[in-house]
Image (cartoon, rainbow, N blue to C red; front, top):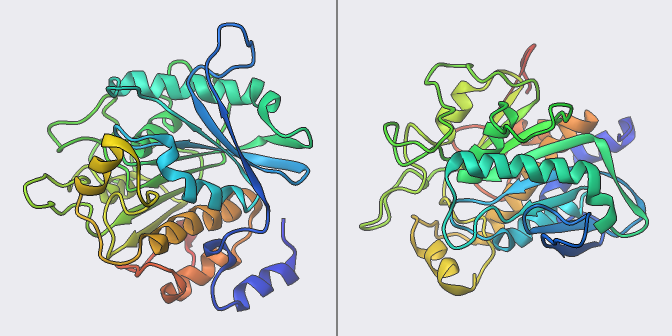
Length: 324
């Protein structure tokens, strides 16, 4: 945890350090299911870890509908470089599973991280079992919420979470057509969560792309997720970007092609959106896990420090009131 001098340094900087790539070098470690390796994960995962000796919190990162976990390598590396071990499972193969199956598979992967992640990390790196965060994009954001709300029947109930971040979470095609489990209640502050929650949204997510329907439709997107959260909760909306704009550039294959053209995309640099998303995740984890308030406070006080234009103004509501 940073001391007072460190916090003052962050606050006086022109741009919060969270929006910049961290100082720690990282390595990418793929791990696949195996019938012979007892430490193998239940689903394919990509682990992105600092290589500097130390003990780091674990972040579970869940991909969006029909997407691939490696489509997020820039954002994931950004987070890991600030001192986090990021585990990104691949929860679908050719066709996405049912929503409840995906949530239960997520629970299995989380159980695996608590028992066998160490066997796949660099020798001098350890996972801090006291701090585990859930992060997910699109349908993966909904999956992260569903796990946090207790809908993963496979999850070891002794595992607790320190923070939850939904990146443009989506709960279905519309209010009438939602994926299982149906977690939205359409009642304010109805989510029974005992951890700080950040919801990241996009201004273009609810907009159609020519003949394609919106990728983050109204009534099932970030706005409703935020409304249903209780404090402590934060809301950060990148006004000029679309639902897929935080993905890597030049995505391979048919799935990569579709990811690039299905949704309404922004016209600004995607690298700015990736820095924004990675930065909000990092700043919120610092706040939630280590109690470092300087960077998140700076973003709230002066939204212009963000690489992406924020509209509406960002919010962070603590149980005791709004943090400004």
